[in-house]
Structures are given as structure tokens and as C-alpha cells.
Amino acid sequence: MAELVRRPIDAAALAREAARPDCGAIALFLGTSRDHHQGRRVTGLAYEAYEPMALRALEGIERRTPERFEVATCRIVHRLGDVPLAEASVAVVVAAAHRGPAFDACRWAMDELKRAVPIWKKEFFAEGGEAWVEGRPLA
Image 1 (cartoon, rainbow, N blue to C red):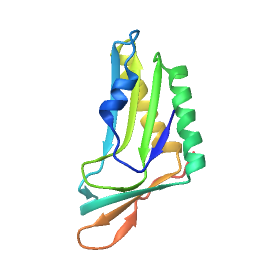
Image 2: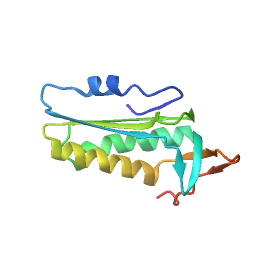
Image 3: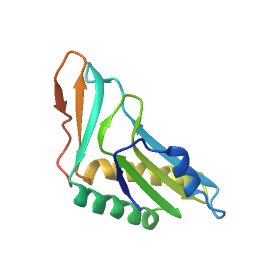
């Protein structure tokens, strides 16, 4: 079940929850906040979402991932609100019998999230000011 949270993401708990006796691979991707963007020093991030639509889109990705890849499960958690540097803003965890499909599915799910989910990122800069990160139109 996809989640939008306003607290740190517990990656270890997500990995434990994904463990299954029929799966020999768990792929976990964490998107973390970094201290720079396009030559500017970033001091923090904040995320906003159109929550009902974002949850539906995330749940759709979770549902489609096992249909597209040989994986047993997919789970996505995205953080909203302020995210300090080096903390996770998004987690995608996939369980599969083998590592290849797990890696492929995890990457596809993250790419699909970036392409189609209405979540927006604002960066705060060391020299002052803030800006929304420009993305591309939602699919």
C-alpha cells in the first residue's frame, strides 16, 4: 500500500516487510536530498502533492509493477513537507525471486513515479531564496 508520509522513511522496516520466503531478492531504492542543484548550494527541500491523486497514482504503479516484471511485490513511500539534507524523500522496495527483475522493476517504478505522480519539490538555497524544481508535464 503506497504511502505519503510527513516523517522520516524507515528503510529497514520497508526491507523487513518486503521479505518473503519465495523471494531471493529485495531491491530498495532511496532517493535522498542532496546539497546542490545546477551549481547552487541547497540547504533543504520541501515536497508538496495533490495527495488524493498522488496516492492513486502511486498505488497504480505498485499494482502495475508485478504485472510488468517478474516480481512478487512493490511498495512506494514518498515523504512530504520538509526533508533535511541526506534524508530519504522517496523509497521504492521490490521483492522478487531473482535480482535482475527486482532491479529492473525498482528502476521502472521510480521512473514512472517521476513521470506521472503529482508531487512537487521546492529547494532552499544557501545564498537565500527558494525555487520549485522544474520538471516535465505529467503524462
